[in-house]
Image (cartoon, rainbow, N blue to C red; front, side):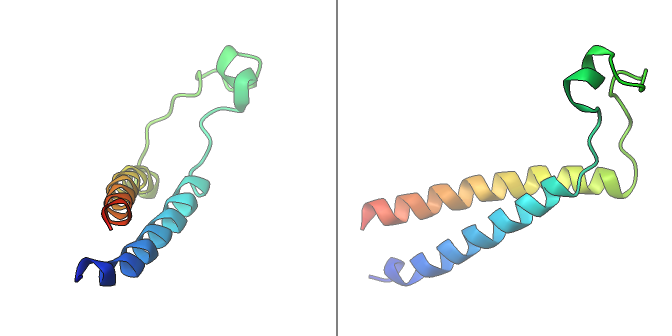
Amino acid sequence: MVMEQFKPLLIGIDVLISILLMLSILLQNPKATGLGGIIGGGADFGGGYRTRRGLERRLFYSTWILMALFFFASLTTFALIKSG
């Protein structure tokens, strides 16, 4: 089968996307200092809301794109392994 040759490639792509997704999540700045910042116990009186600008905005949108790619790559890999 031709699809059997794509399994290691799809698994490798899945692992690469998952590593990039973890990095993009870890690089983002936290908006509030946990539950205390959300309720109002922190020193930030803004309620934890800030506008994303520049690099932070690109990182935020790239996280969503990587999440969608990871979802579809995982479904494709699962379907390929399940079928054969």
